[in-house]
Image 1 (cartoon, rainbow, N blue to C red):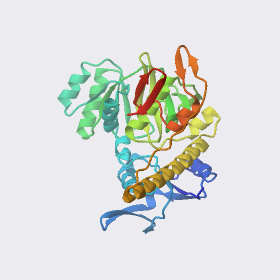
Image 2: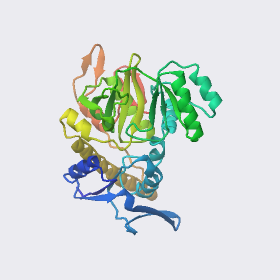
Image 3: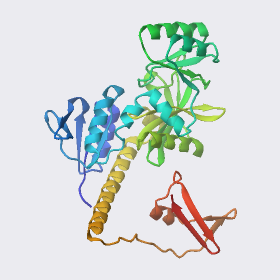
Image 4: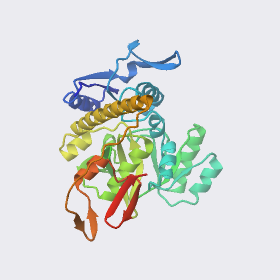
Length: 361
């Protein structure tokens, strides 16, 4: 096993430092890099990332975190480094995930359940929507984190006054239906194919937002498979291996409010009484190993192709008695591990007497 180096790029929040500390227990070396000291230069047809004016070192893994104000910089850094380093968040994700409108459009394409949301381009169109919706409603700025830029209107008159001010300031905004949850929401922390932590947040008296930064209190909660799958699919749809997904519990089931690319983990750590930072660090380490192993396999395949040699996939045979549950065949766990199939894959199942073949599409 080769020794791996990693870097955490962030604004130095306590949550980021918690993750940094746990990463040091897995990687040979971990550098703490302040996002504000990075710059990206264009030259010789490629992006160059400089740290304190010097070329940034090469790393096997780079975990970049930061607020919406740094989205263009985070995208540029990821575009430059992702060819040689494992990075859990794709370049375009920093632009999409930090813009509520772009996020809503993308989640809609993946048929992820969300509260009904409207975007308007004029005061006339906005007032027409306000006259037709049920109150209360929520108004949101497309950009913002930790519950900032979220407003609550209990009546047409209140919403109309807010809209007049927003249009006067030339501020874009979204109008969203209000889901009554008694000031509660759910945060699920996703790492790859798993929800590694989840909590229910409860707003303080007089506050609609349940965000911890807005004074909300967290408590552990167990998510059912449907809620877990929605959270995991949300993360995948925006291109994030690691992110938090905030959801509301409605009579129709979980509704996604938004994903968070740089979630705070102090609140969920205290709520669950678990080392969430360690789970993130271990995931980064495991994925970095997998990333570089795939790189070696690709290089080997290219060599075989250049030599004109056909590379045959390794086939495994397992002798086992079949296990049935309710007339359904259950495959051994090792079949899942070797095939690397997961619940989000579409598969073709070929069946004939005495034979079953499952292939990823």
